[in-house]
Image (cartoon, rainbow, N blue to C red; front, side):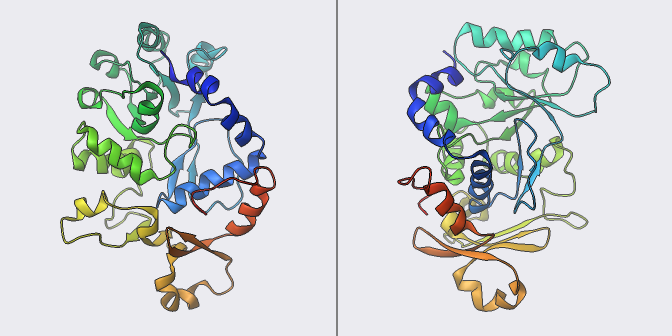
Amino acid sequence: MGGGADIQSNNRKNIDAILSVPKDLRIKWGIYKNLLNGITTVVNHGEYLHINNPVIDIFQDCYSLYSVREKSWKFKLNRPFIKNQPFVIHVGEGTDMKSFEEVNELIKWNLFKRKIIAVHGVSMNTKQAKAFEALIWCPDSNFFLLNQTTKVNELKKETKIIFGTDSTVSANWNTWEQIRLAKKTGMLTDRELFGSLTSLPAGVWGLNDRGVLAEGKDADVVIADRKSENSSMDNFFKLNPEDILLILRKGEIVLFDETLYSLLAQKIIGEEFSKINISNRNKHVKGDLNQLISKTKKYIPKINLFGL
């Protein structure tokens, strides 16, 4: 069974409603979904997006292939005279033999041994994993579509595991719930899971100036409420969007909690921020988020966007 076709047939009504919203608004919502979760850099898998002044970094220096079912994928993967950038492709997104064999087909036709980063790989085994630079693990989407997920506890021995999210059609908008689901599987240690969200993807994508808080690094900073007196790692896995107090992107404030307003008001004079409420916590977010909400509700009046 494969996941992509399944969601297209079973969730057609929801997908059609989302597609009724103009693409530029959907892109902005994707950006803000990540920002509200404390994510400051995302990798776009799809057609190149032209975005003016996004509030987070959108990494697009890679080649996107949807799957081995895509037309002319063999030529696209093996075409000559291209930049030295990784290819990102959905593969093994299912539990049947067909999904397993498509992984072999992709490996077989990677004639020039291009660097490939796989997405999902639910049917992938350790022998196949050796052929990939990394694997993007999307456990929430996997469980929603297939009732099981990738065997990253085995595959991590042969390739790098990067944490990935998916469309809100098949995954929770709250990235922290997705992270807790991943933790619950026990397939990665807490340190490995933390690394799959920070330093490891920074290395895979060549973003070596970020991913860790260290001297000489251009790291973004996310500060959140402490949830308990337990370890910092325990506190990390208990977070939710409402717990985020401050986000700095390249030294610039892009989100802060109402409790910090008196301290930060002078630093944001002349900049546009929107005041929103997330689970009874007021946040100030860079940009006109309230206008974005109003524009979106013209197309789907009853839509509830992340509880806003």
